[in-house]
Image 1 (cartoon, rainbow, N blue to C red):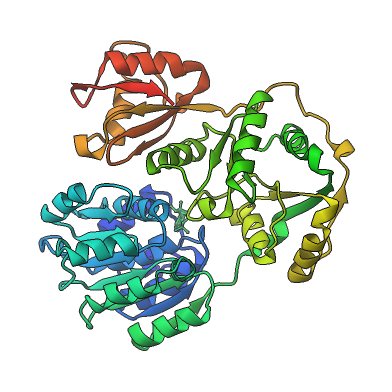
Image 2 (cartoon, protein in one colour; image 1 turned 30 degrees about the horizontal axis):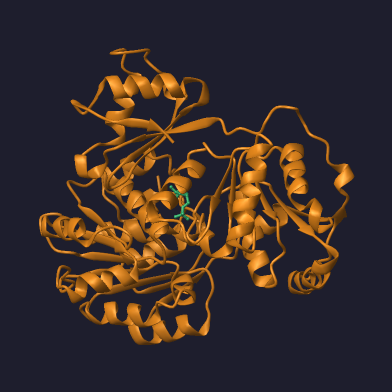
Length: 464
Ligand code: AMP
């Protein structure tokens, strides 16, 4: 029997990798995988235009893993990412996909954490490095990172890296890699800077373009005309009317984010603010809470929300209309991904009408207007997230793994044995671990972990 063209078994992958893919629930290739994996596995350079959510990470991860020699302790693959959040996600996906191979070490190198720990991880031997350009430059300058053995270089979300001003850093990093390497460039758009990078660093690349999925048509955009003093109340009304499971609300300034979060919390709505000046620790915490469903509404500025790779948001709210129509489309595109229907709600005052006009021209689409009086609370219940986050003060450094935490919570030792359904996402970071648990067991689960042991050691746990 011959394999269907979308079966992973049509690719030159080993049995263990195929079994792992099946176990991960990757039954068929996504379009970007079907288009890029055959040339990438054949060693060709690629320029692939693909969005987040398309399965692009696995598209390059499977290729770089296939070329890796686990018995050789040298950095053989390097993935450059625009942000730390994306780097963490890419590392996590590579680790998942590498489970089938023995002992592949993936090291993430991003700013915001001390260099020393990263240097120690590199000294212990890394096969794959994932990082942001600035921090990679630091390691190259300090000679703690050697790229002489590199086989595969990936530029992920290259357009975003250029937007963030990383062009020179990227060039410097790439120049320290062997010219014999394979280069895979992924980018959602293809601006001039990308063309110039490709010209300088790619060899006869195969071009792959996957048309943006029909996501746009499944996004319902609604505009509401309001007066300025009505703004916060209108946001609360929208949230209580639609009760989306997760919402990203955009404000144009940090102060607006803070003020809105204060207001929403007073109204019984689980909201958190994300803006540029947050410390890395606070930022990680907010992002973990939003990703694991213990925060229902994230109120963010555009800059802060970059690199936030949470797919399938139920709703996006434009609390402030942005002056840049391109930014509007970017914001709205965060909902309704991967075929799920999304809701994009925009609040506009009379003063914003010029901006709305520019958005209409840019989107080639006229706006549909609704009145605030069409909004009635779907229930009188507060809008609380279903989960609560516990923070364990200990992470990868202490060799804590998600399985250890799950084991501690599901065992009958030292308290009730919780079911898998009561436990959500477990995210192990360098220094701490975030565990989402159902709201009604949060206190008890926290007490149980504090009293018991994780990986044979007692741990400190707090409710976030
Ligand atoms: P990405 O675009 O790389 O961020 O991937 C989006 C999501 O799709 C991730 O959660 C992947 O784990 C998942 N994914 C990637 N490839 C497949 C596949 N072939 N089948 C099912 N899920 C996939």
